[in-house]
Length: 419
Image (cartoon, rainbow, N blue to C red; front, side, top):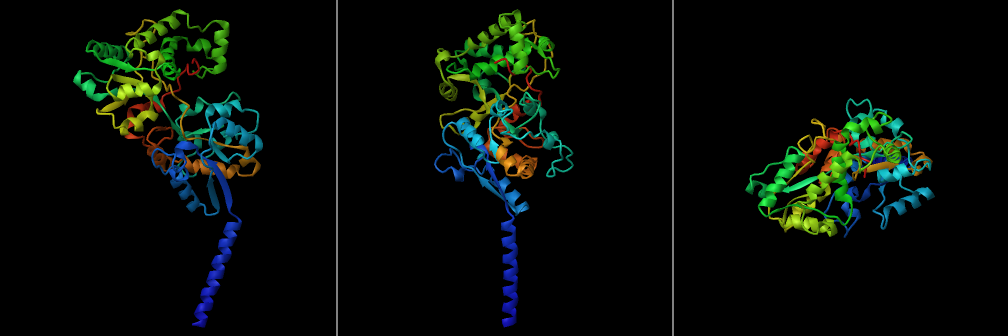
């Protein structure tokens, strides 16, 4: 008995020794993954619905790497950009941090964000057969946010998309189907109006909705002139290129193409509800939900609200922006391909900060990002949110957003910066 107790004691001491050794060598990584992916358990009383968020990814990574401890930074209160600048300036930001792509590119030269290009060229060990981490992503959403210095400082794992929501019940009533091109969309609007139905719920209290539509039309009306403005040959007109073209007078909205584009935009607004110019997004949503309009233009982030709203008494669906062709204007050639108008914005937007650089955690931080963006790990987490589309190959989108999903693989809209 004593001998057995002695053996047990020795085993306990050995276990304790190695446990202490592991924890003594334990590496910590602080992450802020944004409001969408921070688990609801960390935001009691603020979450509209309960989500696991990044919990499954963190748990699996820590199990695979028992010497690593992942610490969440909770949702900061107030204006996020102010918080970010304060943390980054003081060198106290999380090692991995959610950020808007605009913010990262505004901060070039400050040493706040890690250039990820060298790591994107390495294999992702968590994706079987992968030779280059970059190849696991659809390039359009990433390339839009390549900075002026030519580098990528942020990983975009998902993307919100904009397009049309439509009342399926109303479409069936009037024998309508999803439009194949812009001309057929206008035919649908005309038929609805002739049946005393307001086709579109629109808002003008801010410029978001009109910007999406305006930019979409620009890509078709100015498609034949891309080479005129695209100095670096990547078929994407950057902020600098469009600014130079405007200064030179080679790109203008009072040109023949510009005026034709605005007339097409005005035609659509002729089918909007009265008073749309002063309406806000919430009012447009109410009009659509209460079947006072048949369609509206907005983003994938509306999906859960529309699905769960008790006021909705009809089936709805989504479709991406219809292409424009010569049926709309002789200035537009037939066969212009659709592009990813919304490329570049999402919720899974993560970058490595100066805190990781200073704390010698860059390899750990990039390894965790590789793990987090492996499709088997990112896919279920993105799908759970229900409002964004994965930009990682091999992930399955929320089924209700499937009509938007093909747009993720489209090249970036060439006139993304015309807004």
